[in-house]
Every structure is written in C-alpha cells, then in structure tokens.
Amino acid sequence: MKLNYLIGFFLLPLFASNAQSISAELIPYQLLKEPKIIIDAGSRQYSVTVSSPYNLTSDEVYAQSKTDFQNELNNFDKVNANSEKEFQQKLADYDADVAKANAKYKSESEEFKKLSLLERLTLTDKGQNPKLVLPNRPLYVAPIKPVYHEPNLQNYVIIDNNVLASQINIDGFSKDGNYLTISLDIKKTNFQDNSGQTYANQPTTLIVKQNGQEKINKTFFQEYKYISSSPTNNINKPYEEQMHLKKVVAFINEYLNQTFAFKTIKYSVKLQSVKNKGQYDDLEKADIYVSTNLKKLNPTNPQINTAALTGMQKGIDIWKETLTKVDFKDPKADFNAKIAKFIYFNLMNLNLALDKKTDAEKVLNEMQENLIYMKLNSNEETELKAIESQIYKTT
Image (cartoon, rainbow, N blue to C red; front, top):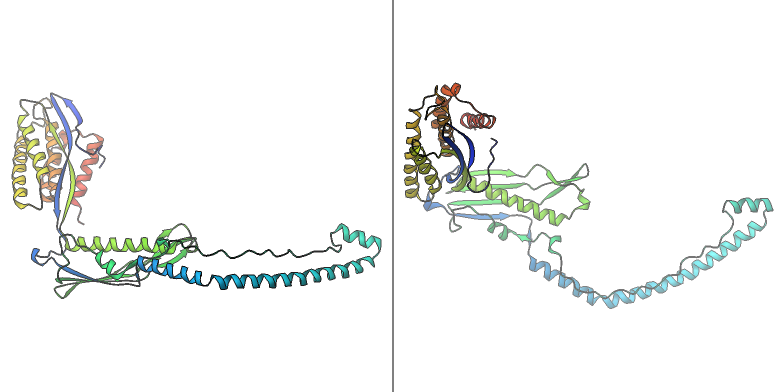
C-alpha cells in the first residue's frame, strides 16, 4: 500500500468538489495480541536452566590477567639473564661466522686468480667474482620489564549459565515458580569459511514443559548463517561469538513471548473524513467517535476497552446509515459516490484494524457492487488491492 504517512497526525487533502472537502488522518491504536498457548493469569510463572560451554566472568578474566602479570614479573630476572646469555652466544657465533666468511673469500680469491684474464673479466661482468660477505654484528636488545595492562574483554566470551538464564524473559510472567520449566542447551559457536567469508552456527535446543507436560522441544541455529565478509582467520572470534550468542538469546526470548505472552502492539490506520459543515455534520461526528475511541483502546483494561468499542460503534452506525442515502448515479448529490467511496474505505480499514475480516469482506462485496460508479485514482486502486489481499489472505 503506497501511502504518504508521517509520524504524528496530519491531514492529507484528497479532493475538493461539490463542497466536499475530504481528508485522511493516520490514527494510532493498540491491540492485545494473544499468544499461541494461553496460560491462566494465576499460573504465569516459570523457571529457567541453561547448559552451555560458557563459564567465564569478567572478575575471573581480571584475576587471571593479574596472575599472568605477576608471573611475568617474577620471571623477569630469569628472562633477563637468559637474554644476556643468548646474546653472548650470538657474539661467539658471530666471530666464528666472520672467520668462516674470510676463509671462504680467501679460498675463492685464490681460485679466481688462477683463471685467465678473459675468464676473470667474464665472471666479474656477471657479478660472479669473489666477494667478502660478512654477517651483521648482533645488537643486544634488553627485555622490557613487564607493565600491567587491563585485559580487553572483547577478546573473551564473558558469560556463564546463570547470567544466560537471567536473560531469558517472558513478558507478564514471573520467575517465582515452575508451572513452565524452560531448559536451554546452547552449544559453542562453530565458525566456517565459505568463499572467503565467515559463517557460523550454534545448535540450541529449547525444551519447555507446562505443568510437567512437554510443549516445546526444538533445536534452532543448526544451519550455518553469514557472519562476516572476512575469512575466519581475520575476525575477532570471541567478539563474534558474543554477538552470535546475543542473537541466540534474543531469538529464544522472541519465540517464548510469541508462544506464551500477551503482547500490546501499537498500530495505525488511515481514516478519511469530510469536514464541511451543514449536511455533513453527522459524518464529522462519526469521525470523532471512531478516531477518538480508537486512541482510547486499552487492551489491559477491559472496562475502558469495552467503552471505547461502544463509542466507536456510534460512528460506524453513522457511516452505514449514510451509505443508505447515497445516490451513486448523481455526482452532484450531497451524498454521492465520492462520499460512499471514503466510507467504504473507512469501514474496510477499520474492520481489518480490529481483526474483523468477515465484516471487512461484507463491506468489500458491497463496494464492488457499486464500484462502477466510483472513480479510483492510482493510489486508491493500490490501496483496494492491498485490502483485498488482507481480506483473502489465509495465513
């Protein structure tokens, strides 16, 4: 559907003729999405156990880093002594290598002198005459005394099973009971090269029991998915593993919430209205009834929700009554095909917004009976096709 929406509320002029000034407004509203498995309010409790290869905390990383530094510091005198010893050995080897180089040069020079002048000139032109090549004298570089540096936590997978368990959440549920028992087995991330790129998988098995009866037993993230445009030897594996683990936890939370949690979702719907005074006052009232009460919908408060739906129905009734007054064949009539068109669109869009496909389909059928009298612009034709697709969609 191609609509020029902006954040907030605005009026979009559609047309103005025969004293009919019709505009559209984007109305926000919220609905409660039911989960796949509904749990009674008194039983919305769960517990989580996680098994994984991760058992490292930041405190352990810091502690190990300080231990490693102290070991290096304690070993520094030995390292320094070994360094000086190795240098003295290199000096001794150097003197021997110099002697060998001189001996080789002397031997080659004597052989070279035995050659004829022409032979010596030829070898010299080719750069094959004897040359004295001496090795570089070794330079002593003293070891640097260790200096402590804080470890970069991005080079570690800092997490353990208790932390992972604390990150599993179901909206509207508490972790005070065992009505739902969640077991999560997360394997280590596996990295794989493919055409110079990195892919990864991390088999994760989710088992959920409801009051002792198994409801879910699924394994996710078994297939290798794209991670980086670089090969595995060019990526920071601990960092990438942390990112992948976050992705796994986010997916599990989304899956559990879709399965068990009620969720308030914010939507918006386009409704049209006519603002002219006089003969269209009732239609303006209808717009106020519907748009105001749409905004009042409160899925978490049944009393307010019921009152909002009742108020909205007053506007719907006005729209339906107005349709009975429409003269489709007279474009100059106060209630003509243009008025009918925006009411039909309103009724279909509103019914779809409230998940009433059957009612939306009835309006669509009525509109199609009178469609010959209505002129739809390209945007309206696109919108109508989108509405038809929503109404007849089976999944």
